[in-house]
Image (tube, rainbow over all chains, first blue to last red):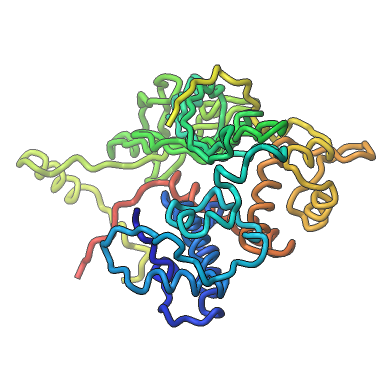
Length: 317
Length: 112
């Protein structure tokens, strides 16, 4: 299996003091905590840092780890020699609040014995009951799904404890109905769909956070939907009735004469459904016809000649 | 790895308007009611305004309390720290959504 360089993970030298290790861990924990960071691999990095800290913060474990890794080189496959920890005493009940089932195979191969979770010792002679853990996951839907509702199949990988006390990872698929009117950041709770409990403990819950995939046309903020609406200069200057897409079908939008760039026209109730429904905002973008042929250039030059117009009049230059 | 299919489960959208009691909130989040009281004192969650002597919370409070728990447990934040962190995280989320939603300007080009 792969050797894990805990010093590298924490970004410290092998000669780092315990204080330096603690500081390094805390910085990483703050940065990559999944509630704080939106990076895709934040949770992995957070857990890795936690595992590294778990070993390096304890002088005994750190010493054992150092001794073990002294002869390892980058890229070598790793196997802990039998009785490698002979001569080191592990005192204490194991781990503080850290959850050993979250740690890597590498960690297990070094310190798993101290957990007492290996097959020989978990014979069921003593019953163990615990409520299963809650799970949190994101479900990404299209904007259209918030208008129509949707069915989504999600796959979860969850650690479970089998009858012999082994921790195994199982895949589960769930079919979830996303109702109309759901908003970004909203949570859906599925009771009992988290990790199964142990013994007589009941299962934990599953929480899904709803997020929208980027839409080619619309942008979402809360209940409201935004659309950039391109118009021609004459439409903005003279006013026009413009066919405008909305998530619930096109509408004719009246652009008043003298409309300026960036003006926002609100279409009430055309945002995410609900009571009250959100609004759609059409943001006017005046687009110039390109001056890419003689006729077009001539027309522009005519405008320049015949329409007295200084757009920079207010700049004092 | 084994795969097993589960039937379509009952779902509950956590809404601002659905009400739950303090006991239900504590039970769902698996914490003592005293901890919820501390969160209320710090302003992390607020009971819904009602004439009742017993507190009622929106079901959306569930995820907020869980987030507060995780920050407290994983980062060692004390209560005021948790409150500030949540406030700042909310603000960041708001600003990011706002930025995403308003018009997308092309990246600047060098003029001189």
